[in-house]
Length: 372
Image 1: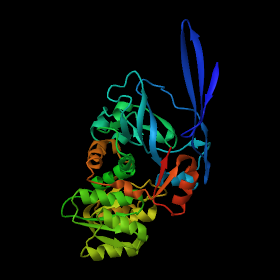
Image 2: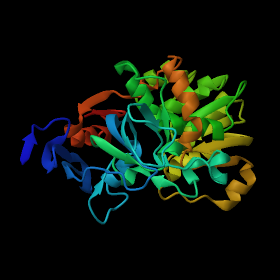
Image 3: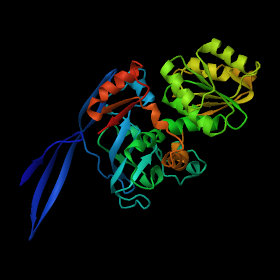
């Protein structure tokens, strides 16, 4: 016997098969899921996708409580990163564990979890050194597509961090921010050696740049310069702890940073854009002996060797090892010491994901929150 339940939460429907097994009936349920799929430049569709299932014994399946659009999603959305075939989208996620593989030991069904945009075993030598994004068995969550009602998370024990209990609704945006943009901004600050007594400059006023300001404040920076030309983002940067706003960019922006630091440059500079101009602006804004933490996904960046040689600055960055910071970030959020969820200035139902991309592409939104 077949029966169909009504659709909800992005699921087209639920098909049940009732099988006779002796004196018992066994109901097998199969969900048909809808999620975000990118077909090409500025062509995001909310359409049928296979429901995730346990593939490996280390997997977990979570029901998404909230997802979002990332600034890095805009690179393929704009066609800067061409795609060869339709692909699921989304790599930031929080939700409730529904099912686990036979080898999962630390995560249990019913827990609310936050995970990184790279799955990692968290046991290899690279993970133990704090670089889980470069785990020897790293798996990109973007390949699974988190802009959907459910998500398969590989290497669940090493990837997911459970909250102490089910969070209240007002905490969910901040916990979602920890999945990527907060963790990435935090890594940028750590890579730039931000600390007490230091002057920090942040290049980029997207969600990562803004949360790098928050991170710098939490890490004790004395002066934090946010480089931004947008009034709404400047306001949020000041809320997060910026002490100065610089509207200029490129060489003019560098000159302003030098002017604020007696001609020396900042001790720490966080690069959160990923272009040639932003990287050179970051390097040139840094004093000799200072540190650049670069976390913007690089596109077309080529560093001039001679200038870099004589700059005598430290460069450290790449895809953020968010898993390293998640326990601390979850604790700060849970105890309401930080509120990174403020970066979400547009909330949409998941089936309006295409509008979420358009709003960010057109700079009508800093970051779009998606609710199933």
